[in-house]
Amino acid sequence: MDTILKTEHLCKIYGTGNNLVNAVQDVNLSIEQGEFVTIVGKSGSGKSTLLHMLGGLDHPTSGSIFIRDQNLFQMKEEERAVFRRRKIGFVFQAFNLISSINVWENIVLPIGLDGRQVDEVFVEDIIKTLGIENKLHNLPNTLSGGQQQRVAIARAIASKPDIILADEPTGNLDSKTSDEVVGLLKMSVQKYGQTLIMITHDEDIAQIADRTIVIEDGKVVR
Ligand SMILES: Nc1ncnc2c1ncn2[C@@H]1O[C@H](COP(=O)(O)OP(=O)(O)OP(=O)(O)O)[C@@H](O)[C@H]1O
Ligand SMILES: [Mg+2]
Image (cartoon, rainbow, N blue to C red; front, side):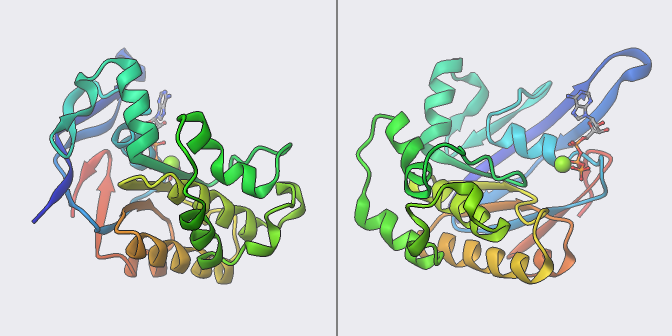
């Protein structure tokens, strides 16, 4: 098996004294290249904290994260920022699109920021897969929620990251649109050989993953 992401004794503590929260406690995960994993658990159980650390957005209190053989938090800050831009794509519940530029510009912006050439054939293929090819010149606020989330997904996939991390990407969508968007996300990551780790509250969505990780009080219980 080809492990792409591994955590060792990963912990995150917020606050001190009476305000101390063990948000993530001794998490040991191993995720294979191409796997689709969902993370479920009650509100406040530590899902987002875990996902943010996996993506290098938040520092662990202790423990390690390896992406392939690279220790994410032994890199210098700047090195980690570049690594994150190239290897990891994020999709959040709030779509985080830039309102003053059109759909195409939103999708290719991170590639430009990274100083890379846009692989136009690849990006156009993603856009067709996601069914937003007739919206490329639109501003984000002229799209429906489901369409905006598809743009955010296209943007995450377009920079060819190895891993896509999604935090309740369908939290703002109705159930029919949610199923569609997750279906497209799953199909896209399969097509491009990417690894998908997704937090969801939706049991139907959790079921279509290769594996589901259940978190309670910061611990992986299943
Ligand atoms: N910046 C912070 N400062 C202090 N405590 C925090 C911070 N972020 C999260 N926490 C706490 O850590 C715990 C885990 O929060 P987290 O956001 O990871 O939960 P979650 O499982 O994503 O919940 P939800 O399903 O509601 O999004 C909670 O008790 C939360 O209050
Ligand atoms: Mg959360």
